[in-house]
Length: 418
Image (cartoon, rainbow, N blue to C red; front, side, top):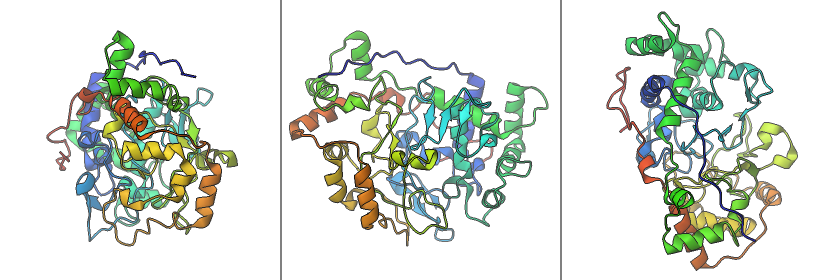
């Protein structure tokens, strides 16, 4: 039985353009990373449709974008970033209230901060929104932006657990930004003369920028929903499959094709996982790490499919390189898990990375398979091709480069990845 089509009626929070323009500069400025070498844009660049084009990225200890990102032999990354860099489209829409693959940041009006996270209430005090809180957590990640243990003052603060206090990592970054006259002046224009720049000031303006920059709600599918514009024949047939026989819309619901919920679909585990540094396995149990509920093992958030044709690789750790491959996985997840071919991964070189510990662990394989929620289903190659055509109709090509684009320079004077 076919599901009804969604309405193209997403609503967005208003933005302050002074904050947007300041947020653009900070988004592309490596000043926010411990060693001043990694910007938010390093892993979320318009060149790669607001992601990085990799299965698992490299943060601190590497340079370049996407497939051109290479390690610094004098400062090797400790490990890959454990999860695939998600795209940033439409995060200013009111419906996006859950962040990260495991949902470890969620809007919760019952909390004083309005935000819930297992990391503790003090971590989310003062942020203007969930998007604001999300935008700054990477600076505390040694693998993403903070850096190695003794590498810089921010990294040392993170490793010692000094995050939010007067001498914590956030305060150190804020002081760096405030010491740059152009940034200090911009924050004073927004917040008043003599304003002392705080970490939430920085994250708030970056969130404003993300919300403004990558609004993507004018794809051919949106135009079809709003105005009845004709879709190409293959895309129209794919849409009928998506909302009918294939039952994709059971999870990929709404205008942006996400129910904002969590599901286990037996995706292979590669890379370091989300285990603690002292643990020797490469496990990533997804939502379970947030809730502690065994029923949430290996569940991950349903991604939005806006611009999905441009945001390969797919899955929470980028295990599938093409739309056809990830669709085929959905047809029989357990069989696909058992037959997984690691050659389709898009991974920059990292010596001694041990990327396949989990894929070679029978216990892990069995646990991932046991958690799977999707029953096997049949789909012909023609039907898969038609669904891919529909997914291409979700591309809002005008949104890919963003509204403001990449700045030529930033106030810190540090290099900007173009």
